[in-house]
Amino acid sequence: MILGVIEFGWAFHCGASIRAAVTRESRQLIANPSMSVDAFQTAVRGDLSGIADPNVTFAFATEAFGSGSATRVSWTYQHPILYPFLPDLTLNFSSSVLVPQ
Image (tube, one colour):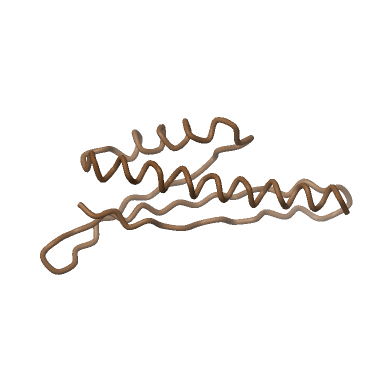
């Protein structure tokens, strides 16, 4: 049971670390609105160097509102739970950040 607690704790730590890295790099996107998706992904993955599998998928979408616009940065991450004698389980983490332009 202790191994299960450790495994789930690591999964939630990975999800929270990705959310923090995306938020941190979104601030860079505010300063540099021409930043590409590839540059954003590289920066986030650089922040996640301590994570075992920083396999995160990103999507950028422009949203218009009133007289302005913003970029929605969405991300998804799937973390496999590796626990003996249990069926394969994957935790899905996802979120989005709205970055004003």
